[in-house]
Length: 383
Image 1 (tube, one colour):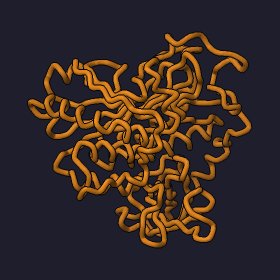
Image 2 (image 1 turned 90 degrees about the horizontal axis):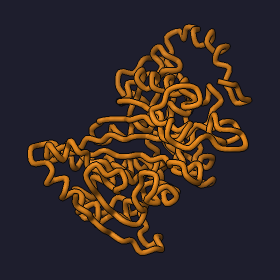
Image 3 (image 1 turned 90 degrees about the vertical axis):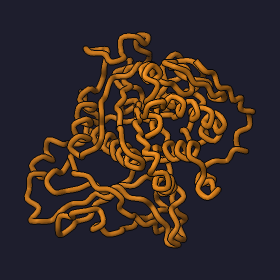
Image 4 (image 1 turned 135 degrees about the vertical axis):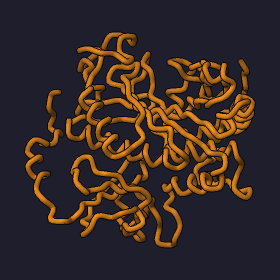
């Protein structure tokens, strides 16, 4: 790949990464900011932590990340998960954190807390999640990598799961990210080139409950860090290029103990009825700019109408044909955009299927049904 002014000089860095740390451990604390991106900063530990419970709370300037006002800017980082660091190797770790305020309440952008409460209350349902993260790689000028500077490549067709020059771009980044995720112990289950050139997908899961969101957020952090070394930008925009090009989604696969058991299809059908009734609320937390993606074309459903069907990639929710034939399994919610928060997706699904906690809607702070101006048309189509 050609270098850009943004490319890190990782070759020179290698000799420094090999220097001994004299027993110290570097812990990189990672959190989610107000814009749905990741931030991080590092601290030195004097011994290797055996569990995340040994890691101390920390803080950062929330006024610089859009998470707090300047006159009360301290936001606290509470470690919730740790992973081996694929960049520094050795005993060094990456630490995923929740964000909290000085009054003891979760930060307004701490969506993990709400999801964790729902997951804990519904442990007996044994939710499994698997999310398919699509993304697009851009050059230093913000244009899809490998596309002509003042034009477009040939129409879609040869790029999906493609091989060969001119069909795929930036495979080196994809391979590096895959290996980094495996080294970190993330449940990455695969990767492939997508329909639009310079667009890729990887899958996280299956994971139990809150673990899915944790693994997905850390995988996003790793993707940005890997691309940083190649001077390439990552965008999770759901429709990065207008026109006859596929958008990017975060298809969410869901199952419970009941849907996986014999006769599970009746539980899947019951779930469809519940999802249909809260379509509007789901769409409010399923990603920014999702209207441009969900037009009913390019393997998407209409933004304002709920549908489901067997093996139908143009429906809001798809049930795999093999699952329908077996009468049990999982369903795929195809509505979430690629930039959606995995905690909000999984939390909202659990809340819709299992009910609110003590009658309280934990997503009240993120869902404003009155903000949607157009009337939603809810429609369920059975196969």
